[in-house]
Image (cartoon, rainbow, N blue to C red; front, top):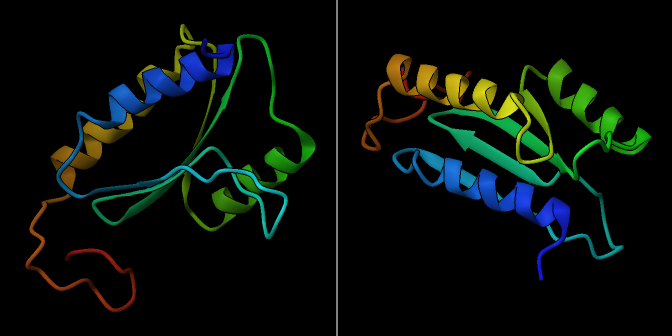
Length: 119
């Protein structure tokens, strides 16, 4: 049986699966070794993003909040989803739709040497 946070992750996986062209995601599994991160690390059409999922009403830990801030300072997009009804899922979808609209996907275009995304 899935945990409450597992339901949030399942909804997130369904949403991300609608954006396949130019999408990369990594779902780290905490093991106690090395640097920890957030639940999802991703890159969509050259734009870095990360998502932390929580059960309804839960908030990120201090370590997770620090990681969210660090990613934000590096100009990565971050999202925190708390529960399956969290309205921030709409924010994620709007962001993904904007990237789809504004960033052309052509895997044959070499990435820009500075920004590491297609020009």
